[in-house]
Every structure is written in structure tokens, then in C-alpha cells.
Length: 381
Image (cartoon, rainbow, N blue to C red; front, side):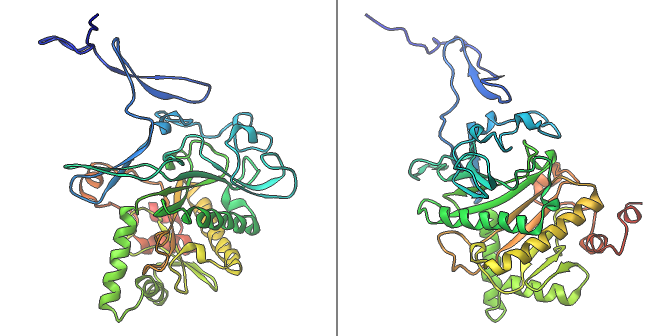
């Protein structure tokens, strides 16, 4: 008995394939391909593809289309009764991988900070990393980790409003999860980041951070490493970022705040209005080397800067992320730092097409405004 082929005959037009969205359960959407003959999404395993000409990598993950808010504008505030990060809703998340508790049992109430795998991960937590190359087409299996750090049980809080001791505990959770994941030989880089507000990509309003561990070092980090190496080769073996700290403290124009261990500044070539960096004054290549005695001081300065942005810019959407040495080479010539980038402008055709950024606020003005020397309303008009 012969079986019919599903392929169209010569000269015939294949049946149309359309992209549509369905709701597999409340609050989530996923993309599916529908066809009268057959239909599928390409693979469920995330993969990371390399650009033809540059070291730009793109992570493709079908699971991300199922997260709350995918392909639509997110609500400004997540209702408590629907929030998976609220106390009493622990069953709405995967089992916790870390928690700091006052009491209670695992995956139950009583926690101060709770870390769980992302329910809609950008990258797979199981499997081996394999590199594939077919001529110009280079890709790597998307294996690593994607986790959520719930920063507080308080649903309506903001990180800037938390006590310094609680922020120090958030930083401790970053360090502890970084160390655990960096020990995995499949992992080459761990990026800790926070999305605050709709424009910054936050699909849930309950205060939380994330981390994604990848089998590839990101291009931005490779570029910074190359800059550090070049500076080291031409500046008597000094650290680029140590020199940045010294030079910016001396210049003063872009300095926002500092304490005994850390400095906050508006970088000389800030890409975004009110972009602010926090750097340790003493050389430190990897974030996970931060001492317990310094976490409180970092929390103090982070709370200070986020509080200034909150008050002056009326709680803007923002991202922050920690740039640190690659996890498989903590001895690399680097100097970790935290970058805060508010969302006050949009990147459009010129930025996307050229790699240039257009920033309408020079960093000297931004620093003066954040220091309280100039009112934002004065600068804006």
C-alpha cells in the first residue's frame, strides 16, 4: 500500500501557514503554527545563533512567548491575587533553589528572599552544550539557567524603598546563586539583572531580579575585556576601571555619590539619559568576590542612587545589570561594576542601524541633577 506524500505536487501552491496566538491557560500566550497539513514551531530547545559577520549572538527561546505580557503591553501593576511571587502563592512557581527564611518550611511562607527557576525560561537548564557549524550557520545549544530572585515578600514595594539590610540580602542572593551556577562547567557567564517597569521589560510588578547563565560570554563583556587588555598593555599594566574611578573622582563633574568602598558616576559616554554606574573603588575582577562587610555599603549606595532616580524622574522604568569577569576565568583582567540604565528615550532606526546612541542629556548635566545642584525641570525647559 502506497502512502501519500504531504508535499505539494509540481506547480501546486502549498497550503498557507499562519501564525496565531492561543491561551493554553490564564494569563499566558504561546505562538503556534497552524496548517491544514501540518504545523509546528521549530524545536522547543533554546538555541543561540551567531551573526554572519560579528560576534553577536541571538538567543531563540519559544518558552518566552508564553510568559505573562508576551506580545502585548503589560499591566502597570500585577494584582496580588494573581502574583506568583507573593507569600502564600509559592505553589505557583517551580521549587525554590535558595531562600532566606525567618521561619516556615521549604516552598512555603516565612521567607525574606526567595530564588526560583523562571517558569518561562529563556534557556534550558538540562542538557549538554554542543556547538554546531554548517558553513555560515553557527549555533550553540541554549543550555544554562534562568532564575528569578524575589526581593521581598512585600508586593507593592520598590527596591529603592527597602531597608538597606534587605537590599544587602538581595545582593547576598546574587552572590550565592552566582557562585552556585559558575561552578557548572557548562556555564561561561552569569548575568544578574533587574527590569523595573513596563518599558524596561518587567512582566510582573512584584519586586524581583533575574539571572541568566549562558554557555557563551556576551559580546558586551568581550568588548569590555578587550578594552581592559588594551589599556593594560599601554598604561603601565594599570586597570582601566581603576583609572576611571581615580580620574572621575578627580574631575568631579560626573561624580554622583560615593562612600568608603564604592563610587557612583554618570559615565563619560553615557548611552542613555541618567545612565549611572556603581564601581568598587578597590580593584575586584569578579562580583562574587564581594565581602560581607562591603555588601552593606553597596546596598547603601544602590538604594541612594535608585532613590534619587525615583524622586527626580518620578519612578522611571529602568534596567540594571552587573558586569563581571567570565565565570570560568575569574582571574581575567576585569573590574566588576553595576550599570543602571533608565528608560526615558527610545532606540530607533539610527541607533539600531549604526550602533551609535543619541543621548539628549549630557552626563555632566545628569550628574548635577542627581546631585541636586540643578532641578530637572530647569534643565528640561
